[in-house]
Amino acid sequence: MSASAFAPAKVNLYLHVGPPGADGFHPLDSLMVFADIGDEVSLASGPGPALSLTGPFGAGLGAGDNLVLQAARRLARELGRAEPPPALVLDKRLPVAAGLGGGSADAAATLRLLNLAWGDRLSAGDLEILAADLGSDVPACVRSRPVIATGRGEVLTPALDLPGLPAVLVNPGVACPTGAVYRAFDAAGRFGDLSPPPQPPTRDGVAGIARWLSGLRNDLEAPAASVAPVIANVLERLKAAPETLLARLSGSGATCFALCPDTPSAARLAAILADEHPDWWVRACRLGAPLSAFG
Image (cartoon, rainbow, N blue to C red):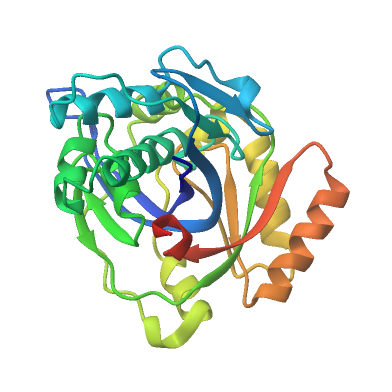
Protein backbone atom coordinates (compact mmCIF):
# COMPACT_ATOMS: atom_id res chain seq x y z
CA MET A 1 0.00 0.00 0.00
CA SER A 2 1.29 3.47 -0.88
CA ALA A 3 -0.21 6.37 1.07
CA SER A 4 0.91 9.56 2.76
CA ALA A 5 -0.33 12.26 5.11
CA PHE A 6 0.61 15.93 5.16
CA ALA A 7 1.91 17.37 8.45
CA PRO A 8 1.33 21.14 8.23
CA ALA A 9 3.41 23.63 10.18
CA LYS A 10 1.66 25.07 13.23
CA VAL A 11 1.86 28.81 13.94
CA ASN A 12 0.79 30.52 17.16
CA LEU A 13 -0.74 33.83 16.09
CA TYR A 14 -0.76 34.78 19.75
CA LEU A 15 0.45 32.92 22.83
CA HIS A 16 -0.44 34.05 26.34
CA VAL A 17 1.27 32.05 29.11
CA GLY A 18 0.46 32.09 32.81
CA PRO A 19 2.57 31.15 35.86
CA PRO A 20 3.35 27.48 36.40
CA GLY A 21 0.96 25.47 38.54
CA ALA A 22 1.83 23.03 41.29
CA ASP A 23 2.49 20.39 38.61
CA GLY A 24 5.05 22.66 36.93
CA PHE A 25 3.00 23.14 33.77
CA HIS A 26 2.08 26.59 32.47
CA PRO A 27 -1.52 27.33 31.52
CA LEU A 28 -1.83 29.08 28.18
CA ASP A 29 -4.23 30.67 25.74
CA SER A 30 -3.22 30.57 22.09
CA LEU A 31 -4.70 30.89 18.62
CA MET A 32 -3.13 28.14 16.53
CA VAL A 33 -3.37 28.07 12.75
CA PHE A 34 -1.75 25.83 10.17
CA ALA A 35 0.30 26.51 7.05
CA ASP A 36 0.12 25.06 3.57
CA ILE A 37 3.74 23.93 3.96
CA GLY A 38 5.00 21.15 6.19
CA ASP A 39 6.40 17.64 6.46
CA GLU A 40 4.99 14.42 5.01
CA VAL A 41 4.64 10.94 6.52
CA SER A 42 4.32 7.98 4.13
CA LEU A 43 3.86 4.24 4.32
CA ALA A 44 6.90 2.35 3.08
CA SER A 45 7.27 -1.11 1.64
CA GLY A 46 8.63 -3.72 4.00
CA PRO A 47 7.90 -4.71 7.58
CA GLY A 48 8.03 -2.32 10.50
CA PRO A 49 8.48 -0.91 12.94
CA ALA A 50 11.04 1.20 11.14
CA LEU A 51 11.38 4.86 10.24
CA SER A 52 13.36 6.30 7.35
CA LEU A 53 14.21 9.99 7.41
CA THR A 54 14.46 12.08 4.25
CA GLY A 55 14.23 15.77 3.37
CA PRO A 56 16.48 18.75 4.11
CA PHE A 57 16.10 18.42 7.89
CA GLY A 58 15.99 14.63 8.17
CA ALA A 59 19.61 14.43 9.26
CA GLY A 60 18.81 16.53 12.32
CA LEU A 61 16.55 13.87 13.79
CA GLY A 62 17.08 10.46 15.33
CA ALA A 63 14.91 7.66 14.00
CA GLY A 64 15.22 5.43 17.06
CA ASP A 65 12.41 6.81 19.25
CA ASN A 66 11.00 9.50 17.01
CA LEU A 67 7.52 10.78 17.87
CA VAL A 68 6.30 9.24 14.60
CA LEU A 69 7.12 5.76 15.90
CA GLN A 70 5.65 6.57 19.30
CA ALA A 71 2.40 7.59 17.58
CA ALA A 72 2.36 4.41 15.49
CA ARG A 73 2.86 2.19 18.52
CA ARG A 74 0.29 4.10 20.56
CA LEU A 75 -2.40 3.71 17.88
CA ALA A 76 -1.57 0.01 17.43
CA ARG A 77 -2.09 -0.56 21.16
CA GLU A 78 -5.36 1.37 21.11
CA LEU A 79 -6.67 -0.78 18.26
CA GLY A 80 -5.41 -4.01 19.81
CA ARG A 81 -3.19 -4.89 16.87
CA ALA A 82 -0.70 -7.65 17.63
CA GLU A 83 1.45 -7.12 14.54
CA PRO A 84 3.94 -4.23 14.49
CA PRO A 85 3.09 -1.00 12.63
CA PRO A 86 4.29 -0.81 9.02
CA ALA A 87 7.51 0.88 8.02
CA LEU A 88 7.20 4.65 7.65
CA VAL A 89 9.05 7.46 5.88
CA LEU A 90 9.22 10.97 7.32
CA ASP A 91 10.09 13.62 4.74
CA LYS A 92 11.34 16.36 7.10
CA ARG A 93 10.90 19.71 5.35
CA LEU A 94 10.47 21.92 8.44
CA PRO A 95 13.34 23.02 10.69
CA VAL A 96 13.70 20.98 13.86
CA ALA A 97 12.73 22.48 17.25
CA ALA A 98 11.58 25.64 15.50
CA GLY A 99 8.32 26.61 17.22
CA LEU A 100 6.33 25.21 14.28
CA GLY A 101 5.03 22.10 16.01
CA GLY A 102 6.88 19.90 13.53
CA GLY A 103 7.24 16.83 15.75
CA SER A 104 3.65 17.15 16.94
CA ALA A 105 2.41 17.57 13.36
CA ASP A 106 4.40 14.50 12.29
CA ALA A 107 2.85 12.43 15.08
CA ALA A 108 -0.63 13.70 14.19
CA ALA A 109 -0.11 12.88 10.51
CA THR A 110 1.01 9.38 11.51
CA LEU A 111 -2.17 8.86 13.52
CA ARG A 112 -4.37 10.02 10.62
CA LEU A 113 -2.44 7.93 8.09
CA LEU A 114 -2.43 4.66 10.04
CA ASN A 115 -6.00 5.06 11.27
CA LEU A 116 -7.10 5.28 7.64
CA ALA A 117 -4.82 2.41 6.55
CA TRP A 118 -6.21 0.24 9.37
CA GLY A 119 -9.85 0.76 8.47
CA ASP A 120 -10.65 4.25 9.78
CA ARG A 121 -11.67 2.74 13.11
CA LEU A 122 -11.28 5.84 15.30
CA SER A 123 -13.20 9.07 14.87
CA ALA A 124 -11.37 12.39 14.66
CA GLY A 125 -12.42 13.10 18.24
CA ASP A 126 -11.07 9.77 19.44
CA LEU A 127 -7.77 10.44 17.65
CA GLU A 128 -7.49 13.79 19.43
CA ILE A 129 -8.01 12.14 22.82
CA LEU A 130 -5.37 9.53 22.04
CA ALA A 131 -3.04 12.24 20.69
CA ALA A 132 -2.95 13.97 24.07
CA ASP A 133 -0.79 11.09 25.34
CA LEU A 134 1.92 12.14 22.88
CA GLY A 135 2.15 15.86 23.66
CA SER A 136 0.06 18.95 24.34
CA ASP A 137 0.21 20.22 20.72
CA VAL A 138 -0.60 16.89 19.06
CA PRO A 139 -4.43 17.07 19.43
CA ALA A 140 -4.50 20.47 17.69
CA CYS A 141 -2.26 19.08 14.95
CA VAL A 142 -4.63 16.13 14.47
CA ARG A 143 -7.37 18.68 13.81
CA SER A 144 -5.17 20.99 11.69
CA ARG A 145 -7.87 23.66 11.80
CA PRO A 146 -7.67 27.08 13.48
CA VAL A 147 -8.30 26.56 17.19
CA ILE A 148 -8.08 28.39 20.48
CA ALA A 149 -5.95 26.19 22.73
CA THR A 150 -6.20 26.57 26.50
CA GLY A 151 -5.23 24.50 29.54
CA ARG A 152 -1.82 23.05 28.71
CA GLY A 153 -2.78 23.38 25.04
CA GLU A 154 -4.99 20.29 25.00
CA VAL A 155 -8.37 22.06 25.48
CA LEU A 156 -9.40 23.05 21.96
CA THR A 157 -12.17 25.40 20.85
CA PRO A 158 -12.78 25.99 17.12
CA ALA A 159 -11.77 29.51 16.11
CA LEU A 160 -14.10 31.63 14.05
CA ASP A 161 -13.63 31.27 10.31
CA LEU A 162 -10.45 33.16 9.52
CA PRO A 163 -9.52 34.42 6.09
CA GLY A 164 -6.49 32.79 4.52
CA LEU A 165 -3.52 34.75 5.83
CA PRO A 166 -0.58 35.32 3.45
CA ALA A 167 2.58 35.03 5.51
CA VAL A 168 6.33 34.57 5.52
CA LEU A 169 8.03 32.17 7.94
CA VAL A 170 11.66 32.85 8.90
CA ASN A 171 13.92 30.60 10.95
CA PRO A 172 17.47 31.91 11.49
CA GLY A 173 18.89 28.43 11.95
CA VAL A 174 19.75 28.63 15.63
CA ALA A 175 18.80 26.36 18.50
CA CYS A 176 16.13 27.73 20.84
CA PRO A 177 15.27 24.91 23.25
CA THR A 178 11.79 25.14 24.73
CA GLY A 179 13.06 24.26 28.22
CA ALA A 180 15.58 27.09 28.19
CA VAL A 181 12.93 29.56 27.01
CA TYR A 182 10.55 28.60 29.80
CA ARG A 183 13.34 28.84 32.38
CA ALA A 184 14.07 32.38 31.18
CA PHE A 185 10.34 33.14 31.24
CA ASP A 186 9.99 31.92 34.82
CA ALA A 187 13.11 33.77 35.94
CA ALA A 188 11.73 37.05 34.57
CA GLY A 189 8.45 36.50 36.44
CA ARG A 190 6.41 38.48 33.89
CA PHE A 191 3.55 36.05 33.44
CA GLY A 192 0.78 36.76 30.96
CA ASP A 193 -2.87 37.64 31.51
CA LEU A 194 -5.02 34.72 30.39
CA SER A 195 -8.26 36.68 30.11
CA PRO A 196 -9.96 35.64 26.84
CA PRO A 197 -9.36 38.25 24.13
CA PRO A 198 -12.22 39.64 22.04
CA GLN A 199 -13.22 37.77 18.91
CA PRO A 200 -11.23 38.67 15.78
CA PRO A 201 -12.89 40.93 13.20
CA THR A 202 -12.87 38.33 10.42
CA ARG A 203 -14.89 40.49 8.03
CA ASP A 204 -12.05 43.02 7.90
CA GLY A 205 -9.74 40.59 6.13
CA VAL A 206 -6.04 40.17 6.75
CA ALA A 207 -5.50 43.81 7.74
CA GLY A 208 -8.22 43.55 10.39
CA ILE A 209 -6.75 40.34 11.79
CA ALA A 210 -3.30 41.97 11.95
CA ARG A 211 -4.71 45.01 13.81
CA TRP A 212 -6.50 42.69 16.26
CA LEU A 213 -3.37 40.63 16.84
CA SER A 214 -1.31 43.77 17.47
CA GLY A 215 -3.16 44.13 20.78
CA LEU A 216 -2.21 40.58 21.80
CA ARG A 217 1.17 38.96 22.53
CA ASN A 218 3.50 36.06 22.47
CA ASP A 219 4.62 36.00 26.10
CA LEU A 220 7.60 33.80 25.19
CA GLU A 221 9.01 36.26 22.66
CA ALA A 222 11.27 38.20 25.05
CA PRO A 223 12.61 35.13 26.88
CA ALA A 224 13.21 33.37 23.55
CA ALA A 225 15.19 36.39 22.32
CA SER A 226 17.27 36.22 25.50
CA VAL A 227 18.11 32.59 24.69
CA ALA A 228 18.68 33.23 20.97
CA PRO A 229 19.38 36.96 20.40
CA VAL A 230 19.18 36.63 16.62
CA ILE A 231 15.39 36.34 17.05
CA ALA A 232 15.32 40.08 17.84
CA ASN A 233 17.23 40.74 14.61
CA VAL A 234 14.74 38.71 12.58
CA LEU A 235 11.77 40.51 14.11
CA GLU A 236 13.38 43.90 13.57
CA ARG A 237 13.97 43.09 9.90
CA LEU A 238 10.43 41.81 9.41
CA LYS A 239 8.85 44.81 11.10
CA ALA A 240 10.86 47.19 8.90
CA ALA A 241 9.59 45.60 5.68
CA PRO A 242 6.84 47.53 3.88
CA GLU A 243 5.14 44.21 3.08
CA THR A 244 4.66 43.37 6.78
CA LEU A 245 1.38 44.01 8.60
CA LEU A 246 2.47 42.21 11.77
CA ALA A 247 5.61 40.33 12.84
CA ARG A 248 5.81 37.94 15.80
CA LEU A 249 7.55 34.86 17.15
CA SER A 250 5.73 31.53 16.81
CA GLY A 251 5.64 29.32 19.89
CA SER A 252 8.92 29.26 21.78
CA GLY A 253 10.89 29.99 18.60
CA ALA A 254 13.09 30.40 16.85
CA THR A 255 10.74 30.75 13.85
CA CYS A 256 9.15 34.16 13.34
CA PHE A 257 6.31 35.06 11.00
CA ALA A 258 5.15 38.13 9.13
CA LEU A 259 1.56 38.60 8.00
CA CYS A 260 1.32 40.29 4.60
CA PRO A 261 -1.63 41.95 2.83
CA ASP A 262 -1.63 39.54 -0.13
CA THR A 263 0.16 36.60 -1.69
CA PRO A 264 2.38 38.66 -4.04
CA SER A 265 3.60 40.73 -1.06
CA ALA A 266 4.48 37.58 0.87
CA ALA A 267 6.31 36.11 -2.12
CA ARG A 268 8.23 39.36 -2.64
CA LEU A 269 9.26 39.61 1.00
CA ALA A 270 10.35 35.98 1.10
CA ALA A 271 12.49 36.44 -2.01
CA ILE A 272 14.14 39.56 -0.57
CA LEU A 273 14.92 37.91 2.76
CA ALA A 274 16.25 34.72 1.16
CA ASP A 275 18.59 36.83 -0.97
CA GLU A 276 19.74 38.94 2.00
CA HIS A 277 20.16 36.02 4.38
CA PRO A 278 20.94 32.77 2.53
CA ASP A 279 21.62 31.11 5.89
CA TRP A 280 18.02 31.71 7.04
CA TRP A 281 15.18 29.30 6.26
CA VAL A 282 12.54 31.49 4.57
CA ARG A 283 9.20 30.38 3.13
CA ALA A 284 6.15 32.22 1.87
CA CYS A 285 2.95 30.41 2.81
CA ARG A 286 -0.73 30.77 3.59
CA LEU A 287 -2.01 30.30 7.14
CA GLY A 288 -5.41 28.90 7.98
CA ALA A 289 -6.64 25.34 7.44
CA PRO A 290 -4.64 23.56 4.72
CA LEU A 291 -6.95 21.19 2.87
CA SER A 292 -3.97 19.01 1.96
CA ALA A 293 -3.81 17.92 5.60
CA PHE A 294 -6.86 15.78 4.87
CA GLY A 295 -6.12 14.66 1.33
